[in-house]
Amino acid sequence: MPLAIRETQRRSGSGQSQSTGTKEVVIVGAGPYGLSSTAYLQDAGIDPYVIGKPMAFWKQSMPGRMLLRSRIEASNIAAPQKHLSLAAYQRTIGRKLQEPLPIEDFIAYGDWFQGQVAPNLDERQVSRIAFSDDSFEITFEDGEQIRSKRVILAVGIGLFSFRPEQFSSISRELAPHSSEVTDLSRCRGKRVAVLGTGQSALEYAALLHENGADVVILSRSSEIKFRPFAWRKHLFRQLTRGPLMGLSHRIIPPTDLGDIRTARKMANPDLFKRQAPEVQEQLIRACTRPIGAYWLAPRLQDVQIKTTVSVTNAEVSGPTLKLALTDGTNEEVDMVLLATGYKIDIARYKILDSSIRQRIEQTADGYPVLSMNLETSIPGLYLAGVVAEKALGPTLRFVTGTSNAGPRLAAAITGQPVCS
Image (tube, rainbow, N blue to C red; front, side, top):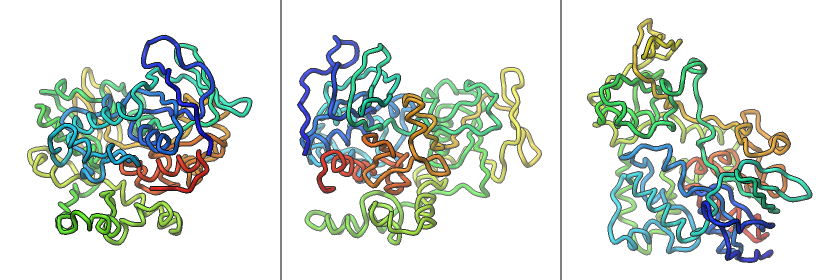
């Protein structure tokens, strides 16, 4: 097993340059997937060089008072070190976290996790990653360069925000993607249309309403759906505490995905991969279908909802936006929030040199073709997070997928068997 020389000198932010040289493994991204991969590699004896701003997407692209849809048991940033779990974090801070979990508490947990595994990470922006002479050349925004034999790209879902074609010519000020709006207080007293009916759309609508906006939800569906409280699962967990918890998790995996028929297929990458391609697609779609958490329903009782409509045209009308709908009506709004999800497209990895992007084998719908250890068609380049859901299953779309990605990345780089 190759062992990295542990680096005692790293830079964080704007200190003196201390990062020049060749690294064993470089991780680009300091969100849940980057931090989890760091923990697994360290447990395997390798100290990766970590680049990124801690929990950046969560801090910069999500509004305050948002709640995680996943239960606490599915919100751990996975690590082989037990002292890095959410349960350990609660003991450290001396209080029990509420459920559903507030975004502020999850970010604080991520920052604490980062302080344990990568206290001196490099927070500079990477401007380019190229490949030459059998290694990767990472160039920072300040022009400094380092090299590495292996690179793990864990930059999150933010790159892949999807904007419908009808809004391609509309400014992001009038029609921002939901990931671009965090200060909802600026919408007080304004008419805001929310496009979409998934968890993000419904929660943004609730938060906008609670911040004093006049909100209308526009949905192509005939009804808004909410996932009911899983009281049977909750009761099952209560009855299988303590020494029975391992058995409990084997029967119903702690991913908060699927039901008694599908949960294990979603949670276990090997089992997922043994399914027929059409079944794999069904499992992924089941985790991405538009549905809100049960606790959102009462918060939306006073919010206007238009179902079975879609926007056919968007036109700027003075300081407002005029939306033409398929039912023949119009909506004049101060802003439309595009809670329209994300679409994977490897071409958006602009930090990768074009020659690398062209060499990455892709599926017909834009996903990278990855091994079960998340390696691309370029040896030594690994991708973690939602881009890997076609390889390891739908858990990779959520924080819970770190429990599948981390062990496999460590196994690939050390040459050892996959350990959970």
